[in-house]
Length: 222
Image 1: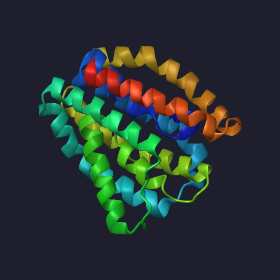
Image 2 (image 1 turned 60 degrees about the vertical axis):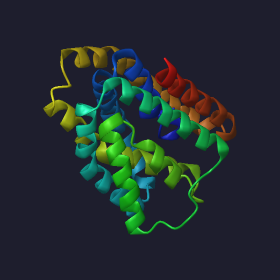
Image 3 (image 1 turned 30 degrees about the vertical axis):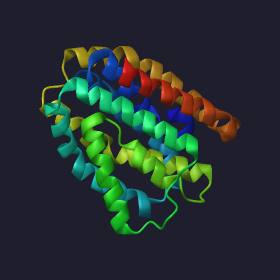
């Protein structure tokens, strides 16, 4: 999903990993994977992105991410896991409904959406939902949409791993899980990139939305 559409790492992995290991153990694994896959995708996307829109989004998100991380460090793990699951379910339903934001993109709104995304990034590992609904509203071609999302996620990937590291959440178990899982993602991302070039969006969307609904349901009801 990430290689194909430019998003999908966090909204699938955050609920699943939170169910497997609880949020304070699962979210740091996902954040490190997000950082590395962003570095993998960024060189091929940066030239196609609309930096006038994306950089204010990313800057506001980077500032708000540490505050969101405070929620991750202090909130009840079970309540946070169920919030993650419910949020992903709601996001999947919104995407399936076809709803998008269709207004203008002034700087003030870019900063507000970026702030909301940063709070979500720090607390749940997921910055994508508000940004995806916001950016996919435009009339740009799929290539521009995908590049915008890749640049946004890359712009906050580094700052997002700092609070868990300082808070002691990135321990030996996290590094071990990352070592096992990262090769799978390293292989899968280029496959997704190739699929983006040959498979129409109309065939991919039902599968992608189905995966979101299953992942959210597992975290909410598991």
